[in-house]
Length: 307
Length: 331
Image (tube, rainbow over all chains, first blue to last red):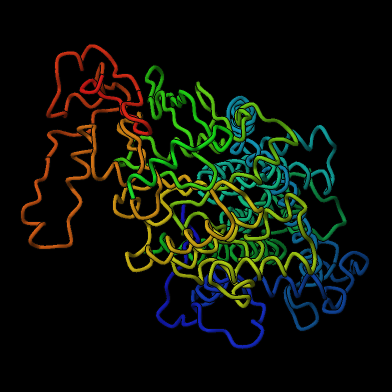
């Protein structure tokens, strides 16, 4: 799998030029090429822009939000349509929806990072060990993964939350566990391909331990698919968390979580569409952003897949 | 020349032997029941400081032999004695020392360097693993090694994809040299390179051998290059050694019909002689190593096959001092 075989570029004139003076440290070439390919893709840039917006909202929610998302309930101004005062209207308790969505971005990002962090670490470890050692270890791990994969993911998440108790942290853990199989399978297949390469034999011949071979030689060469999967998984995780919150198994009131906002707006949306429209749009845009970036990354990191 | 090498053989005391391979077998399982006999009953030895060439067609087991010797593969049967110790029985500290003493240069310079590591980290990996140098000393060693193989210190911070095939192969050689081995297995180190670069790399290897007293097992399929670098040459066919002797003697006086056929394929760079060159064209293809022919494995394509060849496996024996052959014609 020469996913990173150097791609010759017509304009790439850096190849062993007689270097004069100390060579400046620079980023690894394949990554650099991939970055420039990524930025040339319009859809990937759109994804990046959406995510930049999300990140800004999450980081500066306190400054940007005109109202407090929880405490500024104004029962005289319930279910107000969008206006100059409340850009996206107010909900059934008179809270400013715009402020709640900004704060919700922070929660969503947190959910994405924490739960995918869990799937990434555990999935990568399991997949790497499985692919590298093979044999019985592989058989046992992969059958466990298959079992995990046999459940519909949202059902499994619900079951785990039911065991742990409904709150946001447990929802993250549940979504993290549900995401393990995908990482394990992707990492395993990459490891299987990379471990046959000659530089792995060279490392073994020079006395490298299994851990060194796995972490210094094999995994760094599996980074591309892992990165793509991470990006795509964050989108899915945010969507799943919104789903769990909608069912009352994730965020609890009065947290400004998007899924929870949908649930709370349920009874009012026939007379006040904005209570569900805007949180729904926020979820949609965020997931779209991660998916666009993920697809862009996949194309940029493996140019052979591009038509 | 011939007499000189012969006398060298006769005088060689036993302790000069650095590597001895005895009845080495490496079988791979294919599917549920099949067994691929990649290396079958191979025996030879290598003296300290010499170069043994190993030639044969693709798939004849040359690389598997090399990889089993350096213990990238576990032997199915037989022994590999390196400095008197069985390589496949080494453990712990002894195994770690063996990893320093024997090194390998690989065939594909594009696959044998980790694309994620800088040249300095690739070369210094052995130093790191065996704790030979760290910090400033480590970089000094890397620069020194780069210069030894004809590169320079500016190359240390670059990544493998910035180099040509020949330069990459030099980096591979520097990596092998870093742990100061005394035995190097070169697994077709030049077959992936341009012809113009091949000579450079082979000459580099020869120079290093002189300077550092290295012993080589040189695996290749290019007969003229093997003749140039090797003191002795072994010829493999379908997993077995068929002939082994000093390179001059092998090229002047091949005994095994397979060797004869192989050598007759070398073009001669003189049009008048070339015109009279008689090629022995072998019929058919190499049989499958999963189900090799009975008796002598070469008999199905041998122009001189006799009935006995199908019945008995020929014995690997020294028919003249220093000239081994496995063929019923010389039994």
